[in-house]
Image (cartoon, rainbow, N blue to C red; front, side, top):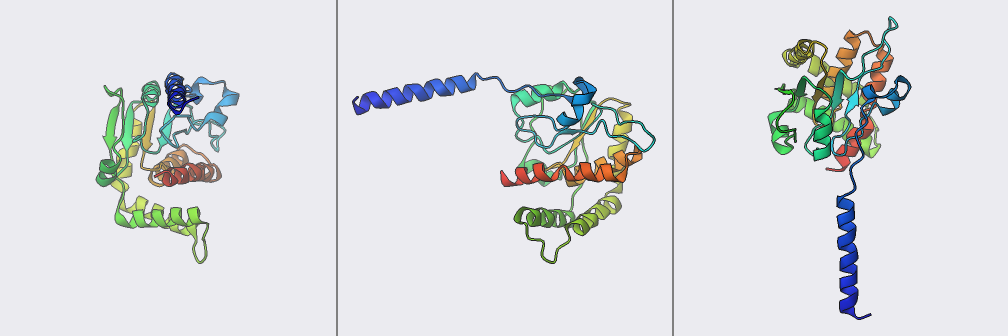
Length: 234
């Protein structure tokens, strides 16, 4: 086979492969609230393509024997890499409010991709300052490197969370008021990695609902792996 024929053969095969790949439909997003009860917990992390760490807070048992309702409270990382399929699935969640906790520079650097037209209200509540950003960044870098010499990540995150509670009380009050105003309709909130600001808000809401501290900590720490994966891909 001549080089020219070989080239066109390879080119044709590659073109065909690209065409086939383009027509492979994305895996549908599995929404826990639409599954049988026994299957929901294993699908808590929704399988979006470009939206990381989007989780349903439903199903957690409370101290008085009840459960947080599925399909009502969602937490997530940002939506800068959302695909068209993601946006279609997002529109089907029935959200009343979509809360963005990022600062103005963060939103400018990684603007969200959202459905058009919007099927929900977008509420912007910036929660970040340089002190928190430094604390959170240090924790993530230490975890990523595995170097904890002379460093207590739990203590650092407690410092950041104390700042969240003391400095950003009005912002969190607005977030909780937005959840209440939804009157039982689904609400989603997110920051950049969907871990610290988002996790603090989730922890407070779950505590208000009567979820035990141990469960709340497990939910908070469940964001560690997706958050690191998101940082490494940047």
